[in-house]
Each structure stands twice: as C-alpha cells, then as structure tokens.
Length: 351
Image (tube, rainbow, N blue to C red; front, side, top):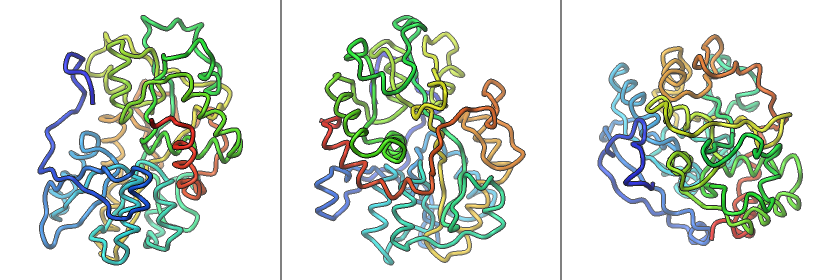
C-alpha cells in the first residue's frame, strides 16, 4: 500500500492479530507465492476456520456479523487467493480450513482438480444463476466484479482511452499504466485471455505490456489510490474499488472505463466460496454469504454485483444483465492457474 500523503482508503481498518504465513513447498517458493499474510480475528479450538482471499477491509465486518448472529466462533486467515489455495493443497487432509473464500474461481478450480473440496448443497447452488456456480457443485459465486480501466481525468482525456485492453501495449501508454500481476483478479483475467486467445498471443501481450514500463502494485486498491493522487494515469482493476473511493470523496479525479464490445478487458469475475471440511457449519456459512442480508451488504457497502437472484446492485451501477461481457467459461479458469503464473513470470511483468 502506498501513499502516506494520499487520500484515506475507504473502509480501511486496523488488522487484528497478525502473523506472517510462509508456505513450505520449495516449488511454491520458486514462483514467489509465499508471502500470504494471515490474521486470526476470533475463534479457538472449536472455531470455524475460514481461509479468505478477500481482504479484511472488504469482508471482515460481514464475517464478524455471521459469527455474532450464528453464535459460531470463527478464525479467519487472510491472504492471496492463489497462495491460500496452494497452502490448502500442501496441507491436504491436515488443513485446518473449513471454508475457502476466494477472490476468483481460478484458485477454487485448482483445489477442485485435486479433490479437496466438498460438494455444496443443492439449496445453496440454486440461489445463483448457473453461470455463477460450479457444474460439479464445488463452488458458488458470491459477487460479480468487472474488470475496468480506472483513469485520472486530469491526466487522460476521454479520447485517449483505448478501445481494447490489447491497445495498452502501444507507445502512447508507456509508463502510464498500473497493474497488479500477483493479484488473483489480474491472474484470472490472464487465464481468461489464454482461454479465448491462446497461450502464445497472451504471452506476447504480457511481454509487450512489461516492455511498455508499467507501474506494478500489490493490489487493486493501491492502483486506484495511485491513480486518484496522480502517481499513475490509469490502471487495470476491478470496478468496485473506485466506487468505494468516490463514495468516500466524490471530488477525486478517478473514473472507471469499461472496455466496449465484449473486450476481454471487461471480464466479469465471480468471487467464490467453497467448503473444504465436512463440518456442517461450513455449509451454513456459505448459505449466509448468498443470503439476501449478505448480498445487500455487498451491494451497499462494497459496490460489487450481488449474484443471488432478486438482489439488485448499487443504484449507480448498470444492471448485471445489461453488461456486454466476453464469453469465458469461468468453471475452467482454475485449469489455467499454474500456466498463468508461469506466463506472467516469463513475461517479466513481476520484475
């Protein structure tokens, strides 16, 4: 996170007890995925253990609400979704995780391939459209998060905005684009690009982007913060971060731009939740996340798209059904996770 002199991050709250988490597998160390931070905010021996790839500032209050209303103590380990998936895979049957709450379906698909997830109940799966749940019952979508280009209106004229995410490798955008190559949402976007355009073209684009001297950040929020204060002119992020910033301070010069015509840069990614253990409280927690109460929280507090039927998004967002989205099979994104990380490494984008 950057910007001691920048605007205050919306919803930022102090971390609970913190401890650093390091994965043990040498192969994972090699790809640099072992810096997942974790925090235990409540719980104990009988606590429901949640591995959350979603940040505490976004979902912490909601998880605390579940614990209070259900009378179920929880222990939450926060970290990068891909890293937490790799951790569960390494821990295997010894994992303390009861639930895996991920930024994306890619990390969940990685675990489903290894038969480390329990099937969700039909009742839970039926709460969302078939596009946003696993055909095999391994995960259900909680919220929709669209990829956008956030830009500084004082530095970028509307006429300078690209028609496609592929255009960002052009010379006129050299040094002006912010990206978060280790972020799960960016990795899912790259996986989707692979699915649609193939590995070779995706690597070409990543390499060209890396050679165009982008600024790299740890996450979407850091990019939006940097754009708002003019550190970088534009950046690839999920839509809701800028809505949260503008809700805090409407005078900020940051705006979202959606790539038109179903461009791959306008991908809609579902955050997902899965059950790891056979603890029945895990299914109850998943049911809570797709309940009307939780879905309204996401619509009103985080500005994400609710995926449960009958719950509307925030008033200033276009309806989910009106979006022109690229055609991607999100069920299959998990198959691309390792290849995606490898492509990003090979492109030099993470240097």
